[in-house]
Amino acid sequence: MLAALGSRCAVCAAWPAARLCTACVARLAYTVPRCQRCALRVPAGVPLCGACVGQPSLLQACAAAVDYAYPWDRIVAAFKFEGDPGWARPLAGLLSQCETAEALRSAADWVLPVPLSDARLRMRGFQQTALLAQAWAGPQAQTRWLLRLRDTPPQAGLTRQARLRNLQGAMALEPAHAHRVRGQSLLLLDDVMTTGATLEAAAQVLWDAGARQVSAVVLARTPAPGS
Image (cartoon, rainbow, N blue to C red; front, side, top):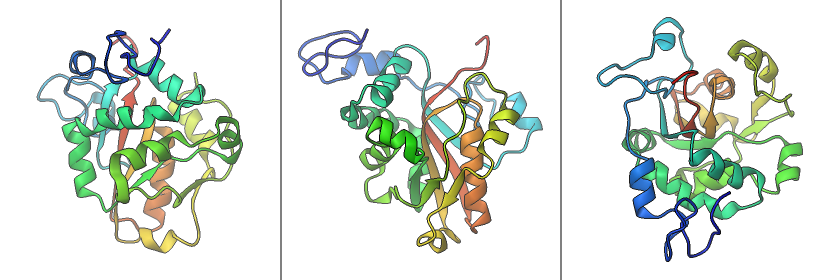
């Protein structure tokens, strides 16, 4: 279980502390070499993982602040599923200390959070990626441009190709803002990346609308199997 929030660190229960104390962030959110296209861990000095060498991506770059592993998997779950939007700002702090994520944000015109469907938004009560984008990117965040038109079946356990099929036709641009994408450098933001299928589906919509560049930042990247 997560430690009680408020004046105690949610990881080590140190008191008094912020939700994430400085010591835990330094110990558990340190920088590691990552593939420039999919953000999986790679050996130092290696720019792309083996999969990205042989498989083109719609993302020109991708960065992740942490792995989707202890303690970040539990904290992201608390943010998404336990009705606790107060996690947006401390988690945005993890993005702010990730040099690669900050470089991509600085190079982008706009930051677009990957949206929830209306059904999931009603269930959760807030859109966690929109809160994360606003806390991290401020006025760069455009939370109403990208839409998810329909809910999709659960993605857990599916292959990348099956996830892509699930997402066909699920993303679109809000018609009133679609023209603003043309010629722009855009940065997608999501909380967790597993196969990248959701980000690829969103990127396709942006490329089709005339975007100049499309990259992505995720808070947490699911590690490769066996890593």
